[in-house]
Amino acid sequence: MSLSALIAALLLEQLKALEERKYLPVWMSGYVGYFQHHFNSGAYHHGRTAWWLSVLPVVVAAALLFWGLHSLHPVLAWVYDGLIIYHSMGFRRYSQIFTGIQLALRSADIARARSLLSLLRGGKSDDLGSEEIARLAIESMLMVAFSRLFAVIVWFTVTGFLGLGGAAGALLYCMGISLAMHRAEDQGAEIESLSYAQKMRVRLDWLPIRLTAATFAIVGNFEDTVYCWRSQASGWPDPGAGILLASAAGASGVRLGFAQDGHDRPELGVGSKSGAEALYCIDRLLWRSSMFILVTLFMLTLAGLLR
Image 1 (tube, helix red, strand yellow):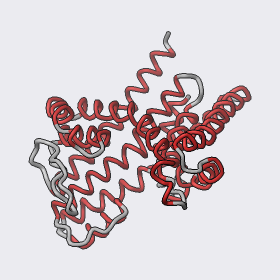
Image 2 (cartoon, one colour; image 1 turned 30 degrees about the vertical axis):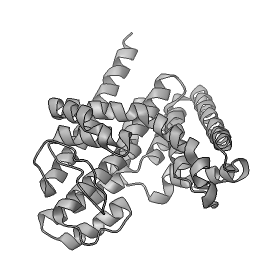
Image 3 (cartoon, one colour; image 1 turned 180 degrees about the horizontal axis):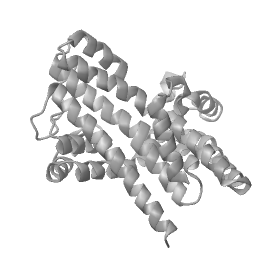
Image 4 (cartoon, one colour; image 1 turned 60 degrees about the vertical axis):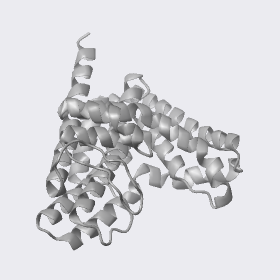
């Protein structure tokens, strides 16, 4: 049931991309802000208390609601899981922007490519050349695909197999994102008070990042993926993002990294593809990975039914 709800949510998102304001971590910003304001005075242990007080009741309530709906009728639980996973993603909207950048680069419309890149990564993209636009678009898209698709699927599946309902896992991850993104009004206490939320975000990402990288290796160039993962990922400023980006670069034969905005970023990948061709390769890699994950989940579900 959870797998079919996941597939239905993915199909629904293809038909109607989710609006940003309906994305759960954005929608929950007021809720997590309440706990940060009332239970987090800036100390590390206060941040830890605020995190658990905001996350635990939501996850427990999600599991209880799933069990209650399932006891009434399995279809009600199926609809509930589907709606939660649908509002936990939002990948399609960014996929459309990524495709637009690819088409703009193919037609040499650099101005439009820069404009779309600004929408994708949320920053200015003035004076960037086609190669820089392609690299930054790929890096941004990979991070979006991870947080708005692959990681949500992993946690949805984990809690689903545990019998808690997939919605509990999706909400757990969305709450982790929302708390990590939250910025307190008191900027002086921001770093210490949010450090626990950032650490929990890293912990929630640990398993999905490695499963996603392994998926890239299976559907792409296995040897280059493993090489880039082992030899290049650790040099990236964010080790988790380094694993994701290096494995994707190795799997698809593209080059990422290089200096940007005055920052000397390590080079990732061993291939030679660049520009619109590189965007196309990453686009195919993401779709092959999505199909592989769904087929794997289907096989696991089928095996459980045949026991």
